[in-house]
Image (cartoon, rainbow, N blue to C red):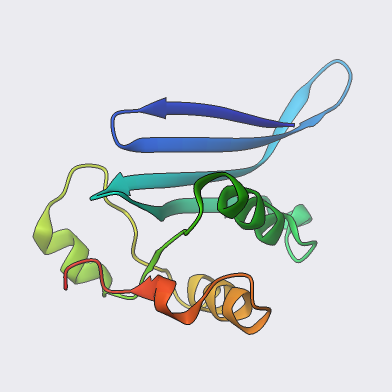
Length: 119
């Protein structure tokens, strides 16, 4: 089940694995709304659940809901210099880059959605 919460410019999707009697968060994806665009801002998938298509599923679901999802190709330092509140859109190598490259290769996102938010 995906739980959705939002605050200001942030939309958080939390994927919960329901176990009796405890539920466990297995993935969390945060989206950042800026200038009529939705950006992937932050994400994680628990290690035991990685490489199982969960991230791809969440991005596909987000695209179905929001339309285009953008990914920053600006360096981490550029994001930090801008000092935009709650901005963590930079990709951490190698996992972040590989994730976006695979989404492009599979045709899930368009190459132009991987762009510099500051240009």
